[in-house]
Length: 128
Length: 159
Image 1: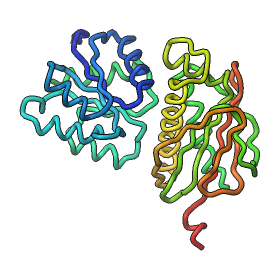
Image 2: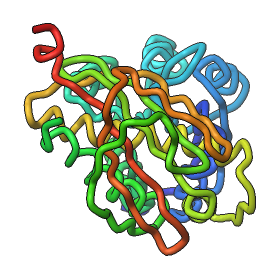
Image 3: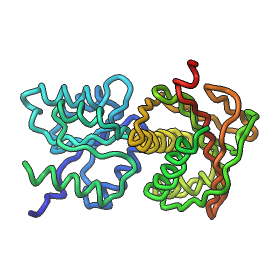
């Protein structure tokens, strides 16, 4: 299956450096249409103002965490079907369970390579 | 301190820097440290609670961290600035996550706090538990850094 690399990805992370790192990894995989937000609150504003095809979000953020953002997205009838990839340093089993229960599309634990990120995105899109 | 608590941090550090910064640090012989002086120019410190309690600090020499973050960001950074401090916090957080995952496989549940970053020549590091810490020295092509761990099993502490 050919993946459309022109999809608009919303990248959410409170660390500007980490956004830059993930953005570089996405670009290495051919995804260049990226918008950014520094927490869940800002991400929801972006989602209300423009069409986004895919969300890549950190878990631990101030104001609104990744898991709170995920729940807000799944509870909104206009956004509920959006693919949501959680990116986090928390690989503990109980965290994975919480994310799955909240409706995450897939889960990726830092550190990761561009290949792993690309593979996770591809798997999510193929299931749509 | 039980060596089982140290290896996850050693392995985690190598794997994180290799994956994120394409740097292969070579570990040296661990030693004990009794003072609060950091062995680097910029440090990330993170506290732990759970089955194990304590803290871990990563202290990088200026040259080592400049190369690591430059590689991570794909752009050359020539001085310790906000980007470097931001990255040190995130590297500390990620290494802590990998180490805690390895500790989980040993039946030890460890939760982490938010990392803090301190920079400057001759800065100090205050471990949550105080006392002696175990330092793992690392060498990179561009300079040294250390992982400084001070952990204790809670059941031992409450006896």
